[in-house]
Amino acid sequence: MSRLVVVSNRVAMPDNAGSASVGGLTMALAAALQQYRGVWFGWSGDTTPTFTGEAHVRETGGVTIATIDLEAQDVQEYYNGYANTVLWPLFHYRIDLTEYERAFGEGYARVNSRFAETLQSLVRPDDMIWVHDYHLIPLAQELRQRGLKNRIGFFLHIPWPACQLLTTLPQHQELVEALFAFDLLGFQTQDWLNAFNGYVTDELDGKIHGDGYVSAFGRTVRVGAFPIGIDADNFAQIVQSPAAAKSYDQAAATNVYRDLIMGVDRIDYSKGLEERFAAYDQFLQTHPEFRERVTYLQIAQTSRSEVETYQDIRTRLDGVAGRINAAYGTLDWTPLRYVNRAYGRDFLAGVYRAAKIGLVTPLRDGMNLVAKEYVAAQNPRNPGVLVLSRFAGAARQMKAALIVNPYSREDVADAIKRGLTMPQPERRQRWEALMTGIETDDVSTWRDSFVAALKACRPQAHPVSAPTIATAGANETVIRSPAGRRGVEAQARRCDAGHHRNFVGVANIPAGADRADDRPIFAADKDAAGRRRHVAAAHREQGGVEEGLGGRPLGELAAAEPHAEGALGLGGGDVGSE
Ligand code: ADP
Ligand code: F6P
Image (cartoon, rainbow, N blue to C red; front, side):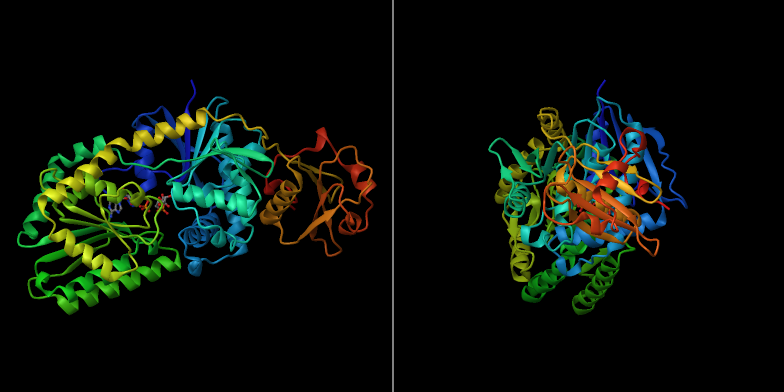
């Protein structure tokens, strides 16, 4: 029977104790997989001195969980580095915080190759594979190069950046080319999909077909917007649980004379916490009549704490929170309660319900599930008000919220006031509209529509065949790629990223060179200092490949080019390891 194999960097079945790995992705996948016979594969979160490639497999709640440990250097370069110091800030429009380091790209390529290596042995031919998020963009390409023909879909949980931002990324084309090895690409909203399509047309000269397919790099993939939702039924049960009732009572009792304003976020600069604190300050300053009549509770779990930008934001938030409390606090009133820990889902549900305002004001967010949880937790007869950033993907769907510009403290302060004073009929009307959307577009709709689209994908017209990598003599490697010049270049860079820093570039096979076919080749040899030198060659263009090959004539190389007998497994690791 065909299974759904879900792959994400982070793997965690959330327990109710409040886990360290909170985040929209795990919440949604745990909910999505529990109703599916599935396998969930990813990083264990642990390190090992030497990568073994072995998966730890266990069963939880009907789901098979398979995880691998990574080396400390992998975690540093791939997770802290390329994923969270390059792609995360860039995709959240913060190029000022993006730090490109070549080692990060190498680690990213290496870990994706390692994921593929282990995953390959777990996948059956009729499985569907669903890859999640920006950590794993090259995974389908790695799997295809190992010969996997399964349907493979990709879902991006975060925004897709505008074309002009993305082009600031060195090797942005290789990154996007890797996406074309999937069958289906899913985005949270039409906005992010439009941005992706914009890159394809403007930067790649690709084609957007009317039927949901997009072509570039000689391949065609299906694309779509699949807004993620929460498990609305399950959340409704949680809200009624004794634990939720208890936390509701606690929150209500502590704030019996005061209205509660609430935010729940990972500590992340994309969440706009600093700006939110400033807006609350503005609110207290411009509306002194509300002082001592409101409390703002910000639950903010520490996140990615090894990354410097995350350490910085945490330090700044501590400072701003302290200043607000010092400026406005009294003997029996703490204006801002700022708590850095994770809570169980039922606890959170109760506190959401007690809050008169849900403040969700990210500067940029793929979707934002907290906005949906806040609404789902409300008392239908006396609901609170959601204040929502226009830059959260959720704002596309949740139009009945008070939509704000999080960069404007006045705007957010006005919305707080408006929410606190909103008459009950208007609150109910807005809540009903929001709740209908949450129930209709819940996590099952998200999962089922993505899986249905993946099943219905036309088989790839241009499957990504593996480049052949073979040794040719003691010191040489030859790579041929049917994916054209770009494929050769991309592979050359992967080899380079894996082991070398001496990629020379692409040379051209002289026109008229005597080759049996017109596929490009890539070759490497050692230079006088004993370093391996890489040269990629593309057929039928002017230029001199011989020079790049250290003076060896092309004919000699072609003659040395092995076929069946020498082909190695793919991956940077196989090329030139010395
Ligand atoms: P992101 O995926 O960027 O973290 P989302 O708002 O989409 O943002 O998802 C966050 C998820 O993590 C929500 O389900 C939320 O309830 C949960 N979460 C966030 N902070 C905490 C916390 N301190 N304790 C428990 N759960 C949390
Ligand atoms: O939802 C976006 C996301 O980056 C997920 O991929 C991730 O699991 C979550 O936020 C939390 O981040 P992290 O896994 O880095 O703790």
